[in-house]
Length: 53
Image (cartoon, rainbow, N blue to C red; front, side, top):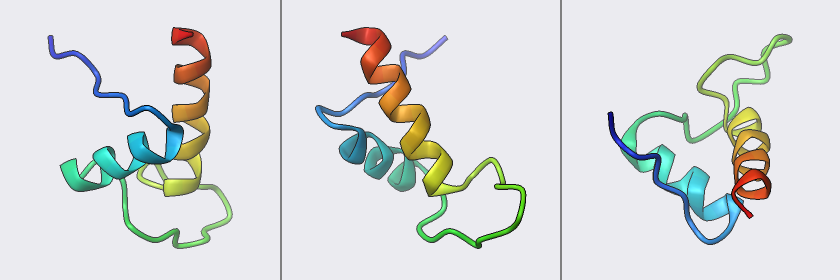
């Protein structure tokens, strides 16, 4: 399997995921957030960086 790319900050990580096509550029503000939501991606990136540290 491939290794997940993490930036130095959560924002950089989400930027990398956006360029890779894994995250949308703008949130659609749906009531239940979709999988490609940048808001959820930022939360996930923060969680992963905290876990890695």
